[in-house]
Length: 360
Ligand SMILES: [Zn+2]
Image 1: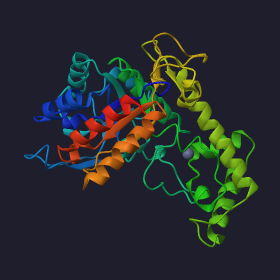
Image 2 (image 1 turned 90 degrees about the vertical axis):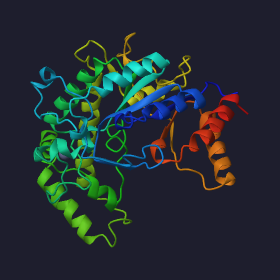
Image 3 (image 1 turned 180 degrees about the horizontal axis):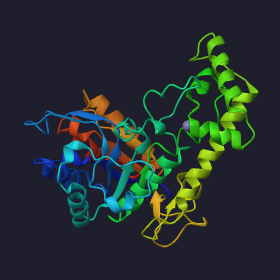
């Protein structure tokens, strides 16, 4: 048996909670026996083609933004204004789904990818990450170094906290900006040289202009920017200072939110996961300074499986095996894009979850 049982959840977009939502959620709960919902509440542009589940409205597209109605009072000090996704209109779907989940005994996690929401920063270009030449990054992404972005993030999380989620999946914050600096031209191309990052570098005694020029020279002279290795010490110094500042900014997320609850950074949670006796390792961390009894955890799924309908039995069996393997490592497992698969996919997932729960 695995040390801690894996928990299974459904990545459940609010726009799927329409006329036919009952079927999808009923089957996920009743047949697959999921433990939680991961609800994308802030996203970039999204589109789905879902002809099997939503015959009358198979195509869905949103420009992204907040998929809930923000409480304007919480954003008065934020340096950027929140923008709601247009599809939502006047509906209070997030509240509806949270209540529904509670009735069904499901934990609810909010999936937030604020940096990827272009509707957030296209009208506010000062938030965008920029290349060494000063061009906005592609795909567009907001920079953590920017104080206005951090204020907005804090306001969004404080606002969402009032819906009492089990925690947050801060999808685009914990990963790329906290990874070690890659000593490659591709890595150099991804380093942000926005005015906020340059200011951070200057504060730490690094000549940001010279670093940007060095990055340009490195990239121009690389035989292939996608594969070449690089070792410019000034660029590395600039990137290190920037990364440290981003990491420090993220760690300040553990400061209490408006409700008095706190966030725990994902890296700490992952370190403490193996020591957690709770079975759901990301549900609160021990040994951190911000581990209040009501702390809201940052949640990152241990594994995510895209729900592509298997073409034959062999593919279905491979999926069952893969899910079982992921479950042996415990943690949380999310299934996503179920709306785009054939309804028969639920049968495959039911087998996968049952097999994984039974253990080897
Ligand atoms: Zn930047």
